[in-house]
Image 1: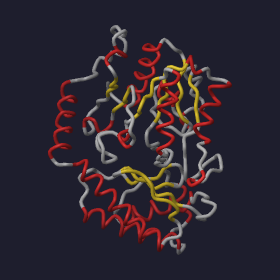
Image 2: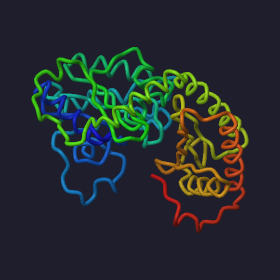
Image 3: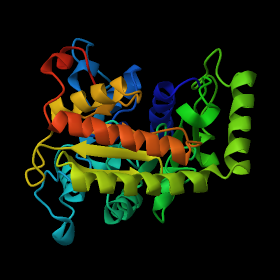
Image 4: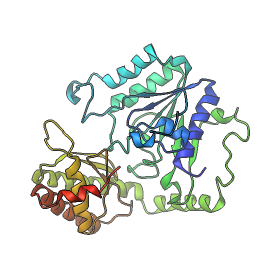
Length: 338
């Protein structure tokens, strides 16, 4: 296949064909791509959907577990997993579990602001899928191939998905994606189930094999873990000096720095985040942001200590410039995140 979008389309076809069930569950604030199947799974922003016409039928959305801004009012120390209960409530009201083919989840939700679900949720989700014969699909287009310090982000938990969706880094920028699952899930699928004229082209496949070899030979999984911890430590020091930093989260080199107006209320610092990105660009650091207030920290896996130190230095200066009112509001008309 060619992209994460059409790989997610493939995953929808696969779980429906393998189970002979019509329904699929995805998550609110998820991003899976822009083809109609992937768009139907996605629920991250209105501009993706408005005026595009109806999306695929049979797709439901459940709340994603966000422990920093829990929509159920929970606290980590007293969490009752209201997010998992909401999924169960969906089964009891509008989405019969015996008709659900698969649940497609980003093991770390990306474009919503790097949201890492709690361990108990993921273990509970696997158990819930097993109890109803539902296939669990790990959507690893953003988080796969070493980004989190593991081959796949789902390996953070003691469970295995039934299907894994791959893309982006699989071939270091060459157009390639893949859907991997147990052999029996594909056995009833006859050609041309998801055939594309230029899918699996040999140049992209060679690039993917070379990518895997580099990750293995250069120890990039370990390097991503170490670099991620180094950056987290650096941002923790910045948080001591900059009131805008509310939370730093993620795994490996898939990190998010959540900027807030108030650490108690956790109100998003949307304008300030755009200004920080602009100030950083002025100083030679390109950084984007999403979910209105989360700086996206996703450097190459081969990033060096000196490069990370320089980036932290520039962000320190940029945060200070914004907090001191030195970045004009006029930049807000041109600086746009995702």
